[in-house]
Image (cartoon, rainbow, N blue to C red; front, side, top):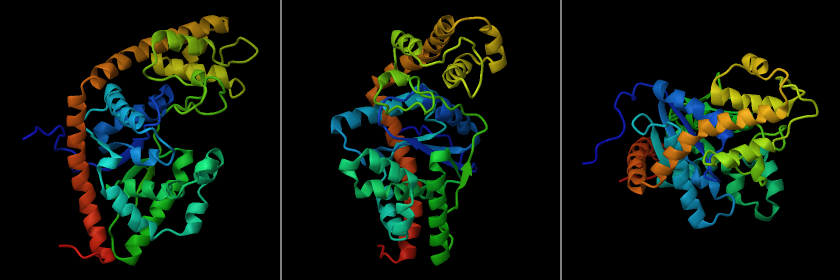
Length: 340
């Protein structure tokens, strides 16, 4: 019998669930905005962290690349400090209950509810050649992800609040029609979580899917690549290192330096008072390279150990399946499906 990687003391904790699509290597922005909070969640909550590969296929994928990026994402989760002994790590596609519950929830969701989703409208404009039904019902699958594990809390940003509201509506609707079945999840707004912006357009978030590779720092970038990208980062016309809404490029680099060094913004301003952007960027680049280096090394070690990754995913599948099937069985019984 395999030794269970999970500890048993999490059953009494509130459940929190989150996931990331395997669309590319994870970025420094994802680390700052999501993974830093995930690390804190592990000790406070019963944490379920998935790789959202079902969501990923709303866009056309090269199968071999999707499989590779999926394992890359799991390895990077662990390299950043997500501990399989504390958290359930799993692949969305490994749990058939996601697809099964989504069909049931499809039948409880109005067309108008999905049509009002801002993300569907935005993604449809970007992918006019492939506006598929999966893209349209994406928020329902997201609701399934949350309700299937009876999540108490869901970390959300501004772009996900609408989806969480749909999730809450569906849970309440189903509970009203039958009886209490789903927990109605609450949004969790982390107290700390930096918003890292694009290096080439500091008015928009850093994206791991940005077509301009110079706009994004990836957690597997080598030191020279990091330094080159920071050197080319957009700043502004003057040379004052100040945290200001009027200086988004400089403020963004200061945020990154803050994460890499732990220095306060006040201390950063003092450190670089009277110093030009060239020296400032060099120091930022060196600090970030030093910060990312051990993560990258750990990632490479884990990624090359496929046996270990498969063991982690098998353990995650077992625990996630038990939790998901418990919920799905209740749903199937209540909607009237005959069960043997």
